[in-house]
Image (cartoon, rainbow, N blue to C red; front, side):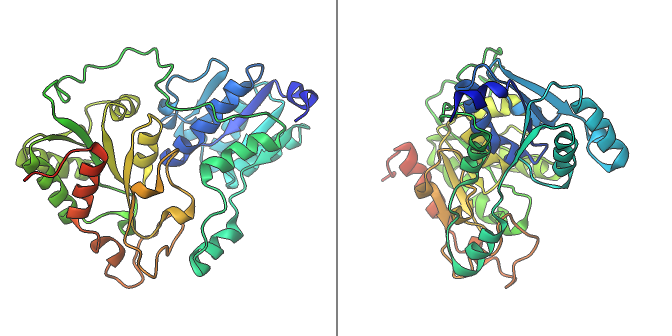
Length: 351
């Protein structure tokens, strides 16, 4: 890449409002771009909630959190544009590629600014679903390519958001006492049912870990009903703790960095754990790693996939199973997950 091109981009607007897992996937590329181009200021536009993920950001990353009222409708979009047009911008990296970001893109194109958009390779999706092909690139790499197409040199200079985190850590000693137990995280929920391992089966995983006696299981969840379920498990099983509602999002991510491994669905929590270098055992249903959404630097050998003939049936998840039985999830046994946890943590089987 030419040095001249790089000098022209002193202020880069980086746009990705949501969703949580997708924003998390952009962070390795954003931090790597900032570190590879210290002369360039990256103005990152994301939602107020997702902005909490940018822990230990390079000094040339400036966050511009957007509230919910400034994201939707004509009035909200207009207010957002007024806010963004106050930022000095030489070019725009659109990491979202949706209607809202198109409006932002065109507003800056009309001002003579360069815009590069994420290639979602929508035609490729049909090849994945109907012909069983794998994504040509993981989505994390596609975010890197947006910066490269703008002419910026970028090397993968990212391992964890906490490597330059100067924030005082919360006291985790109450949930992670120094008692010799191996800390494991479980995040059993996903947005769609056909991406969620049945709770009755996941409870059996929690039960096995508790009965083993060598693990401390931390349960991560979001909504009120989910938290209530986690509290039931906490009361029912020894060495099992629900962390739901105890910490803000940034501190939950920091806590994940203290775990030996994390069990998740193909969901935001897989990507949050990946941001702190935590090894993830991911469980896949309607989607598979072929879709390109495996977490940053995660190993496909840690992905548990039933291998049903109908997988994957969707790229990002959907509300229903075409056969109605969710066999891609129900055929995964709790013992197989428990065994994988022991393998990863190098804990031997009890006699």
